[in-house]
Image (tube, rainbow over the protein chains, first blue to last red):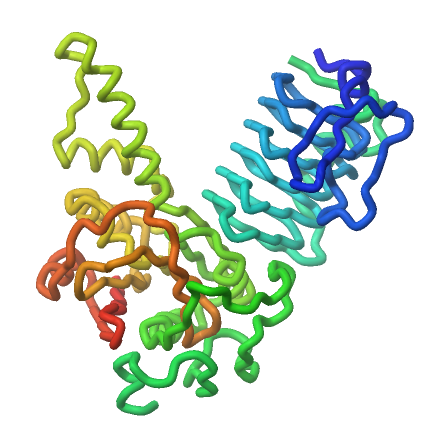
Length: 179
Length: 251
């Protein structure tokens, strides 16, 4: 089970080279680096560090940084997800914005944007309004760009029915991972 | 179109010719990529990159003109510019870097062989070319039949084992809808380096020198290419000064 304490006890700062490292900074004062290449980084309010494995469903509405292993489903209705260089996600991902620097095996729905970094490796379909791909990124899957349209409303409806949609009682900050 | 351009040896970078029937919007041709949702910042060519006029690409687009919301399978690396180019024109694009997958497959096979060497004979791997080709294609290129209107095959066949190449073409034929088009490149002599390609505009390809993923396996002659694509009704070829033959196969 993924607990709030587990997540908040290991906030991660991103150094200049983009490699994540643990930081003793308190969780209540997350540090955001101005001018970072992408708005979503390891300085997000919640993180799953390298070495942590989660099997099940991760839901919430805040930003999340994953540098560990997640298997199942990730649903951040209004949050952003960054898969760090060591991250290995075997899950369908639904988020406002998704940045992939590690490995993802599953469908990615990034409502506003998906960014594949040069170290990113995705095996799965991409659905988004804006897609950026750095040279060196590996993609195996279908790309669907749907500008100005809501992305996969069925998913949100289904999420709401399950009590896990945006504004729901369970947030990433609070942490939830169901087996 | 000049005589030289017909054979892909006309002016390359910076050419200002208009594609006769550029697909899609019919906007004036520009060297800069159009600003669309999937496009990042335009980037200048870097060292090791060059451009070449591609009559094959032009013909490929001409054949897809008016298709509307077509489906395209790109078997090269996922380049932003290439994906954006086709997405902008209404295509649903699937990307699968088959050569990288082949390299990974070979590494996995080597590992399995090492493991099997210490086991009983019944556990050994069948390394016959046909068996290897079957194993590779079972793990890759898994799409329903008649899924695509177009395939960007690039120069993949030159780098695959002949049996894999043959089986791959057979599989692609099943994946293509009737009237579907395959765009392929063949080296007329064994390539010295390794390069990959991306679409710059309707008549230009960018050639990018890259670290060798796999060594070239063979140089296909005209007759062999025709045999490989014998189930296709039309074959068109454009030979460039750079020893690269662009071929178009229409199912």
